[in-house]
Image (cartoon, rainbow, N blue to C red):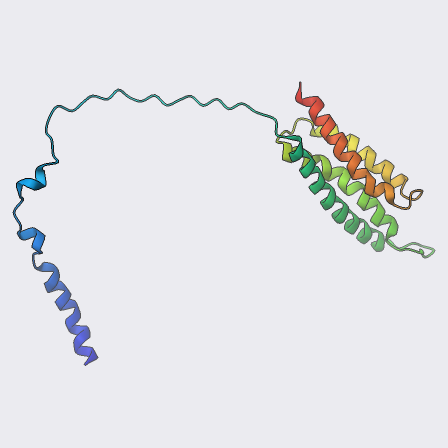
Length: 177
């Protein structure tokens, strides 16, 4: 039974498609042409596209702060991890009390020093101040690492705040040039 339906199906489809439909039998009535108006075609002048002027507007400072905070978080975590791994790969010759701690602090201090200005300038949309702010934030990171032993590591956690402030201040100073 299935075989006969599957063989007859395409034939029936072909026969049904060849028969004229009801719309093809109807003659056009006058009501179907009521909407059609014949007359002169109006000439429309070409439309000129408006000129778009793009003015670079500085983004709000909140964007720069958010970018700096993002760079600081990624820099602290990533730098501490990399510094810890590098320090463990080079063991102390006399045996250390805290293996990996010096590398962890160095990475946590220098990671944000490199990523805070990049995050700040990516968020602000300006890149001309980046070469000026990288040395400043790196100096803050190095000083925070050197002071980490005296401050029990607190300078490493406070340095990103100073780095964000320095990066935004340098960005705002170069914005006027």
